[in-house]
Length: 225
Image (cartoon, helix red, strand yellow):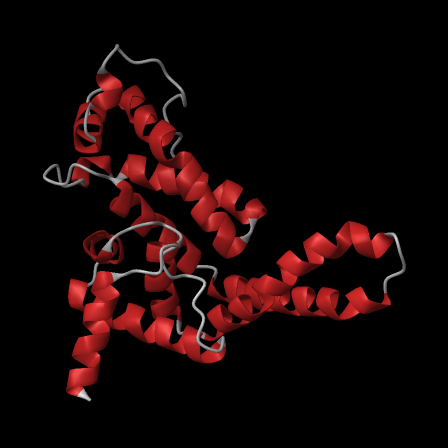
């Protein structure tokens, strides 16, 4: 596996503000420059993979994401100033190589949280008090994890790269190499299935409860059928 340039390498003052595309272009002649991209996005990519596959897998796949990106830097489109969609696309493809592991993890989270909730009533004081908050949090994740596990992989990718990767529709389309219309359609169907499974709630929806693009898609879907 090709090694990355030294992570955390020092760069000239002011270069932190240059665009991702400029960093990548500069790294073609100066490989150490690529470390700036790692500094900017490694934590986000790790967090995204960890939510899908767990922390242990994320440690390896985050590093692999940047190794692959480094190897492909000569093919990066310099007209795209932000590299986030590109990196999330690589990360999502790596997650895709572990579909069964992801589904197993989601089902296990669902079972574990449900079992913890069921055992709460049998716990003696003060142990029950100490674990009550943890059990409550686990219980709140049980149903969503189970519902996510049942989604088709292509729908789950769109949903989670937007909800957990914080990409917009255009960025998700770039990351997954699909048309924006396909992103909208898959996201709408995924969230519809989640709401049906969770009694109308959607833990992946924006925190403020608004998503104008999603509302527009719902309107179009209703008009068609």
